[in-house]
Length: 264
Image (cartoon, rainbow, N blue to C red; front, side, top):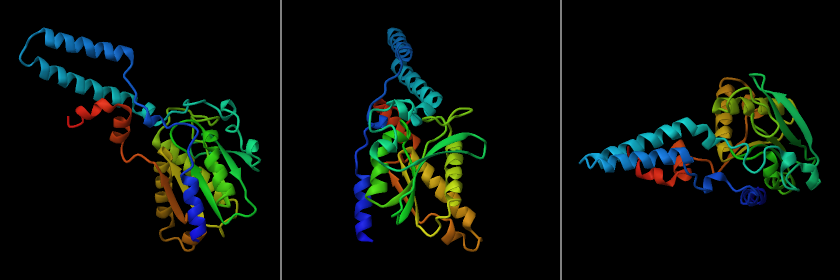
């Protein structure tokens, strides 16, 4: 209905208590800056006609190499703010602090990685939402949005904590493939709750938007040629909030000076 849509949009506009790291510029570490200064000084001190060109080229190559080596740390920041929900500021540690009924659930993804979820069952629910938070912090930082979905939108909420974030474990580095396995495991768990009569919404914020899109694609692919799959298990809607369009966009938001070498 129009009212439900209006309330949902209001929840999306709620500010997050954790400032997205993409809004703050990041600088190279001291050793990298020292190396760049040394290279610049050497090139110009040589008084070679091509010194400036060589200098710019080396800086561009060095910057691209640094971004390639640290790209995962640009995308995934589980330690932003605080590592675990229990270490968050008051009001952002557990749904219980906001008088929200919830159940803490632990499941295993296809590769046996154990992840944490918060399941908030709303007796008055008109829909269900699987919520994927951004690439910084933990699910506790997203409690204002979770509360809005539960209370204002009258939704069941399944908040997923990725591997390597919060108390969820990880055997190796956090990767896109791993996050998609976590999302698929969460969706499979939800399907077992026998709530197929309710519309299911996939809601992703930031990096979670890419996760939600990937899960939606998998669900659509799985439903092809399967009678009844579309109405029983396929998500009804997809909501993506503030998701990056590309890796280049993330790099430019963290390293504004990179725009000068982007054409290279």
